[in-house]
Image 1 (spheres, rainbow, N blue to C red):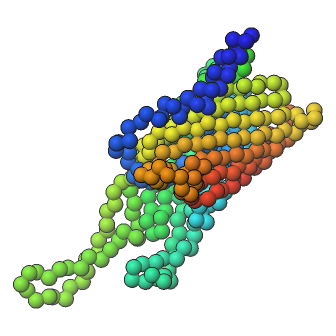
Image 2 (image 1 turned 180 degrees about the vertical axis):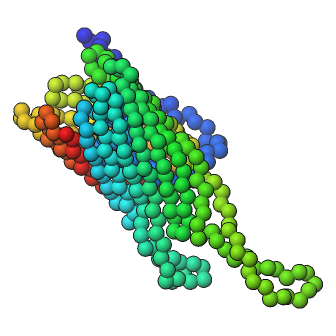
Image 3 (image 1 turned 135 degrees about the vertical axis):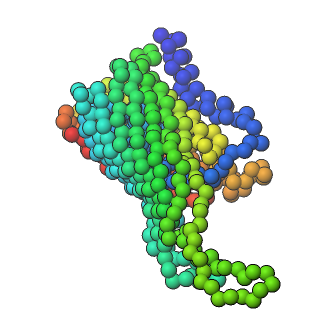
Length: 372
């Protein structure tokens, strides 16, 4: 049995250390299109469990939040459920997410609807001419609505597809887009311990172009050279904006249960991700779940992770240890936990996550789940 343990811990070591090694040798002289996408709120996640795992959740997603992280995981749900999440983001903005999912056909298929919204209200407008404020205010409201269908094609493989509409309102300018998410989940066993592999591509869709009152303008008529100015009325016109792509992300996830007891599970996870507006990144994390505490229906979980995102390095020129570089190194840390109660036909749970955003501070996630 010793050689099985070697395989088990070698796999765990790969999850924890393999991704960083593969990313270290990237060429820095690239043309990565930082800051070229719109509707970035689509990357803010769904649920405190996934947030505590740094998004490295696609391989084990099997609850309502799988609607966001991996549509294929929705087919692994054992009962219908509702999930509601909210957290305060930077600069007094707020992101909220909610979803409901229903397995049917004896659990072979599942369908779900979900919604995410981000924004703020009534912020004062400042201009160069009026640095103290113009007296007017503006608001931002970004929303997506999605519908997911997932199916188990065998006892080891599931796949899912999400169609979603994105509505982006930035002050008096607004735009919309359509996108799809596609995900797969392969689940098997290694040395009688569950192992899961996932592939997800998210936010693959149309570009966003903006219109609205903010782009309406009166263009004055310039006088002809050599002639006296003639009073004329300005000509109404509409400014045109560039189309912006959505933040499309490709993810590959791997999860392995180092401990797989009847009431105790320790899972090690890894995630490789590549966005169209950033260099490649990775996440490593772990989750310890304890079920039926004291023989009751109560359970608890503890989670933690570290995420690496290339664009978070704000000071690549200086290699000296500074407060800023320390903030960058710690950015990506996340941890959290959850409490739940489950019977044969009912479950309820609460999850919490804390995530560090470097120089932007930290944020707290709260999620409420119910199943029946």
